[in-house]
Length: 278
Image 1 (tube, rainbow, N blue to C red):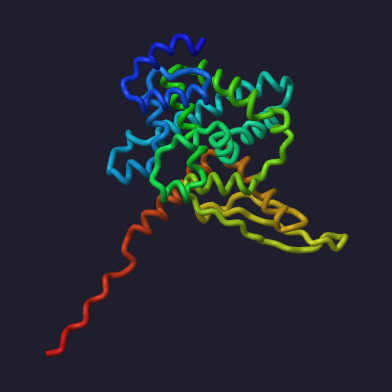
Image 2 (cartoon, one colour):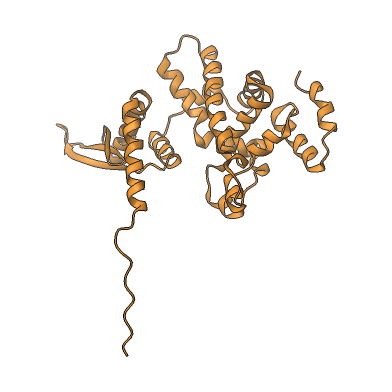
C-alpha cells in the first residue's frame, strides 16, 4: 500500500540526486517518500550546519528527538503484543535493548543508512553515535511524512522481521554500565563509578560496593564479587532510579547547568604584559 501511491511522486522529482536518494530510501523503508525534504534533513548531521553556519532547522537533531519518542512507542506496542502476559519490567528491559545506541548504530550500518548521512569528515570519524542518531531521525521523518502507521510498517516489517530477532534480543544480557555511560555522554553528564567499600564475606570472598556519582550527586550503589560486577549492579539500580525518580533527573541537570556556567566564567584575570625597560 506504500509503493503504488508514491511511485508517481518519485518520477516527478526534478533533481537526479533526489531520485537517487528516493531509490535508496525505498530499499531501506519498503516504500517511497512523499516529501523528500524530511528525509534529507534526517540525514543532515549537525557538523555540516555548524561548518556552514546554518540554523538548527537545517540538521537532524530535532528529528532525532521526535524519532526517539516515536521509536519507543512503536517498540513498546510491538513487544506488548508479542510477549503476552510478560511483566512491565521484562518489556521495559527488552525495549531498552532494541532502542539502545549500539543496536541503532548496527541497524544504520546493516540497512545502508549510514552511507547516506551528510557530515564533515572529522565528525564522521569521531562520532560513534552518528548512525544511531540518524536512524532515530529517519523514524521522525517517516512520522512527519507518512504518519504513525508507516513507522509501524517500517519497524515491524523491515527491521524486527528481518534484522532483529525479538526473542533472542529479550534473552540477551544488558550491559548496564555501557547504557548509563551512553546516556551520560549523550546528555554531557559527568559520571563516575566509585568503589566506596571493600570487604570479605564470611567465606573470605572479596566483596566490592560501587556507587555511581552523576554531576557530583550520589546515584545508587551495587554490590558484587568483583569490581566489574559491582559496577554493573550499581548501573542497573541507577538506571531504574533515573526512569522512576523525576526529581533525581531534574537535580542532575540542574547540577550540570551550574557546572557549565562556572566553567564559562574566567578563573583569573589575564596576565599583564611585562613593561619594557627604557
